[in-house]
Image (cartoon, rainbow, N blue to C red; front, side, top):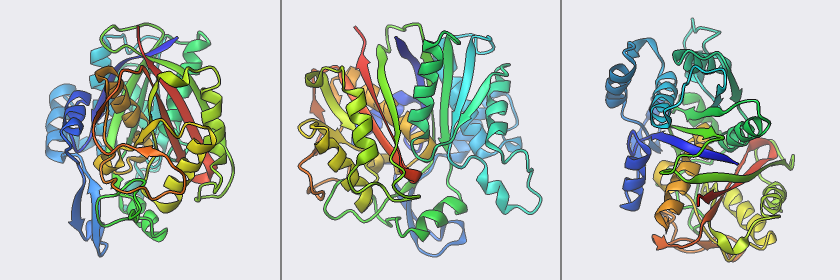
Length: 376
């Protein structure tokens, strides 16, 4: 069995997983409204990391000049650094590898006339992060918004095959003009904090974050989170729109619960982007899989959509919830606004169950789901 033995989150809500989780329990959201971001007219509700603190911590921990690195590179490296430090593994070992999960990487460099053509490539950041730890065993997973969960599943498969002992999985993305304008073109952005599954939801928010898990064949008693099963499904519905029947998410869900104890599942952490089509699709898939009595929640009302970091960040927070015997409320949700009778959380709720499901979807008809369990 493969386990999560260490983790880290860097976001608008803090520079450690513990700080992030503490803020979520207290109902604190990292979403804030700003005007004319990147020179574009209008109000934009986003979550952003603290640049000043990031530079201070990056220099203090790595002794590297932060001005020689992009924000994306600093977030990825520092998050991996903290998780590796907690895991207490030899990051340079040939039995350790690195996987970078991202959707856009250093894409903001394209806006500069003389950008470094190599540095904008996703593999370059993966090489930079692994190289910082003296490791040359790295890869990239970039599969739209499901990248983070795909990267975790990829790491688990490699460890189960006996090829590696530990894999450091880091997901990161930052705000950029390209990303904001792209979602604007879909008319998918909300100028107000998003409201997952709510009848008045009107779009998503974009956030930036980095999140890291260290997946290992070994155990670490104070984490006690085991990966049970994961599934990746592509329903090839549309380049950007989710399936109206929830086909991919339904197939992923039914796959991972085929041998699971349904009565021991505390909650499903959904993608829950707060767009009309995504939330409806997930509700249909959950209902079709006969899981509609299980509580669901979304973290987008706290972070917005953190793209390549989302699947990892939300898995980490969900693992803290299950270890704490708690299901977090879905920030922004009040009145059910989907056609199926699912159960979004309206307040923090205690649970004595041991498992959770992470569900996620993305452009191109991509879908993934994974089930995790609190350790014995």
